Length: 276
Image 1 (cartoon, rainbow, N blue to C red):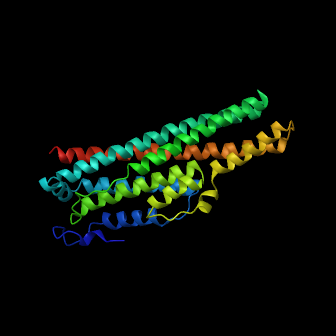
Image 2 (cartoon, helix red, strand yellow):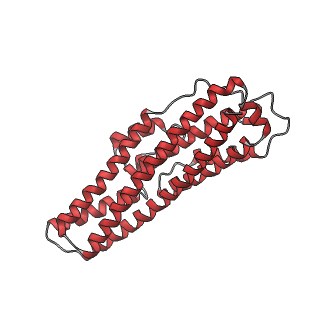
Image 3 (tube, rainbow, N blue to C red):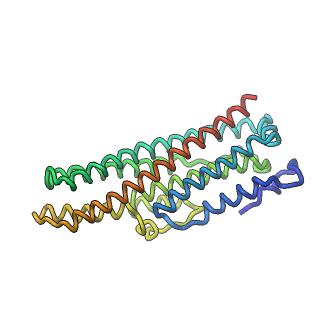
């Protein structure tokens, strides 16, 4: 990974202590090859720390002066436009996670009370799968909207850092969408091409994927209902998997909401610099 403190001749001779912290956070986000719920939630937390670091750097007079130069106005506008796309992704993720959480809770209620029998369980499972399809659609949309920053002056340290933050944020979103969507070969080939900074295989997604585990347990339960066989073990297993899934969704929701607030803060800082 490139070192930022050598990029600009205008930088002070002593490296600011936030620069190594930024590089460490960025390296950590790029290093993990896992795609489990804990790793995705961890990456969301890591993004929050990365954005906090950048926000502190944006408060430095040296960086504010650098960004306020006329030659960087187009760069900032590009970054502001990109930040809107990231906020849209946050809202898409929040809506999809909320819909899936509600479907998960309803499925648990149906299994627990055994109301409606097979037809009710099958109907709610279809709603659950519909939520998953909405996430896959968001993933494809995110892939299509990926952009490059032709106007960036990479000799300016803070501009290049802002680009890196946007790039890794988009990559983590793609990882999260792929994790929620589940390991499907058709969609996964698209994700793997985009995630050039994080190598993830289908096997990684299968491992510790609460969404895939919930699918498997629910399919077993539905088969049992269709065969008119009552199996308390399958009921209990489905309940356990759905509870794990609900906790996973809750962690992702909290991570996305916190990241959303960080993105807003960074956007406001850039707007203030642009307007001064």
